[in-house]
Length: 472
Ligand code: 5AD
Ligand code: SF4
Image 1: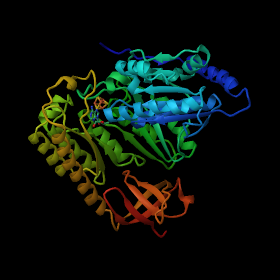
Image 2: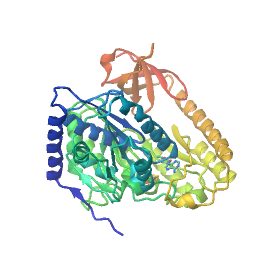
Image 3: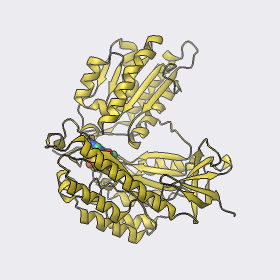
Image 4: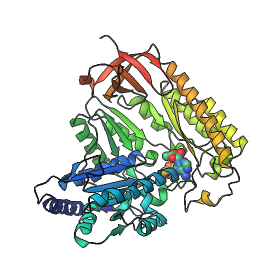
């Protein structure tokens, strides 16, 4: 079944903003400034979505708090990728019974990927009466309408219809920081890796128009952001649904051409279609960070096939060779799943071997989590949790050792970093990132935040580098 691209009319978003104004009048009528809390789980895409929820809430007149006892509206933006995140959400939402007892008018909303799954929406309907509003990722653009319905209807509202998804432009955003910004370039995923729930909850791949992406990037640069991360579940598919002849590498080039001193990052790339053109463009664009997050998931061809990843170990290794040939200083990070159904000791040994061969700068490792409705959920899974944990511990140890060794190679070198915040610790009071995204703790004046600086790396461990400002 093919997806027909859908765009939300600009008029619709203006109507939502008019509803924000109505809510503003209601919630500020007593002269009080109401408070909202947005609690985010999961990936950067969710962080970006939460910035839109906050954008709408700010237009409704809300200020923000981190204290659930103070909040008039609580929005929990959930993740469905692994069971662990779902358990945390359910535990925390359950605990809101206490806050609502103290504050009976408090409105609790749960949104995002977890509740887009039918069984989870049902569970909340049945067992979590504290929740007033439930909406999936496809309904985010009409959050004001849904919230107003809760305020005026006196009934719980559930909006989690199955949907392939649309593209909505013009939703107000309230970004978290002032140095780093997320910029969504596309939504959804068409890959249907057999373990993954994302394609079921986030719908089909759809790209924002290049002119909209570039306009937003321009605004970010003008507002002083120095580190812009282009976000998509699989950025290498960018543009395929648009038929305008712009692919992801072209888009990188267009953002790179915006005048100003800033860095461009992106995530995530799927190895099945990372092209030489992409690596060549990364190398040629002076603002593009030499970092690629290229999730390999497994080093075993048998497991990769069962995962429906559409590449094998050799293709992955070849991509790494090409990418490093274009960018010898490339920072390479990855995701790996341990304990996929039927993964044997030999399969796992293949993964370990691949890690030793590639030597990733950092690895994000996960124990396989069974997801309702995915093909892997019905695959035979004879290995015990203890087997999986043993493999997981071995992999973590390997990952940490390699990261530590790679970090040590930085010692004595002088690098350009972007200072992005304070650590709250002494003596290394500032945090910063290298072009490749490695964390560097620094001693220095907080006035440096938001600036690039040359730093001499003096020490390191598995997690971070430590440095001092280089003399000008
Ligand atoms: N179990 C464990 N890890 C998963 N991921 C995605 N789905 C699952 C699952 N069912 C991991 C993949 C992906 C990362 C974002 O989360 O490694 O790249
Ligand atoms: Fe999930 Fe695979 Fe899509 Fe990534 S590419 S979101 S792992 S289905």
